[in-house]
Every structure is written in C-alpha cells, then in structure tokens.
Amino acid sequence: MRHNKKINHLGRKSAHRKAMLSNMASSLILNKRIITTVAKAKALRMYVEPLITRSKEDNTSNRRLVFSYLQNKYAVTELFREVSTKVAERPGGYTRIIRMPNMRAGDAADMCMMELVDYNEIYTNEGKKAPKAKTTRRGRGKKEAAPVAEAPAAEAPAAEAPAETPAE
Image (cartoon, rainbow, N blue to C red; front, side):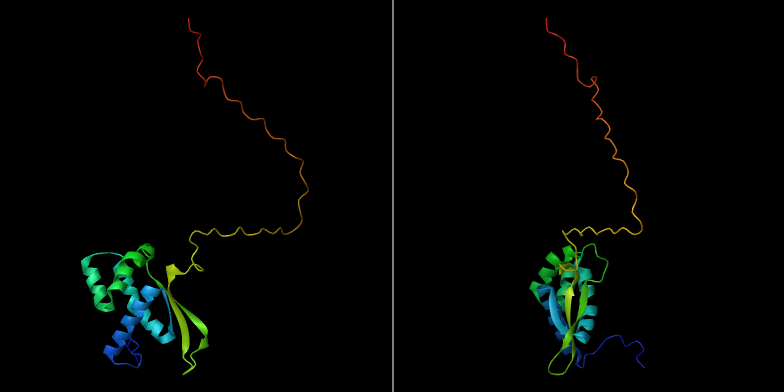
C-alpha cells in the first residue's frame, strides 16, 4: 500500500531528482513554458508552486530560501521581479499542464507542455474585450410600434447666467 507516499521518486536517487527538479524549475521560470513528461510535470508542480508563493513577499530570507532550491541567481531574479508581480493577486495554481497528443518516440512516454498560467495570452484575457455575443430571437416577433417622437431638449434656465448691469 502507498500510505503517506506523496512524492513520485521518478526512478532516480534523491540527489539526482532534486537536481533535475531544480533545473526544470529554473527553465520554467526563465522560459515560462517547457515540454516534459506528464509524471515529471506533476512532480515539478509540487516543487515550484511553493517557490512562487514565497516570491510574493520579497525579502532576503525568501530570496535565500528560493535560491537554495533553484541554485540559479538569474532564475531567482526573474522570479522575484517579473513572475511575482504577475501572480500577486492569484491565490495559487500558478502552473498549467497541457497534455500533448503525440508521445515521445523512444519510449512512448506521455508528453505535456507545462507553463506559467499568467504568461499565456491565449487563455488570459488581458487587454482584450470579449466580443459581444449575438442575440438570437426566439418565438414570434412583436408588431412594430409607432415611432416615438423625441422629447424637446430642456432649455437651460436663464437664472444660471449672471445678469449684466450696464456700466455708468
């Protein structure tokens, strides 16, 4: 039975697994999207999401802790400068795993694309307005009503303008 066995060991020793996840997390942060196997992506999601949560609060302690996981100062800088500002209001779920239809040629492993959620312009609607949906009429149409005459525009009251007095 697999009671309390949460971590997928991925067929590797712990040092190899930690190094691989560190490199994959750095690549994900720097490139915003990577292609990998589904099993590695699920393991990476558990590894990188707490680091992104840490990056929301920029202080020395969090930077050192994230660096101890990533071992890449450029990835840490990118995470704390760019990524953290994009995910500031998001409560979690910073990554997305999209399965790809083709399998790896060598061993037929299921492949997927893992990406940071806020960096995909297709799924996010930043700056775009949704097109207005067409309305369809169902049922019988109404009889045409007589055209309504427009009400005359209200004239501005004369009391607003100050009365001029002739100069003597």
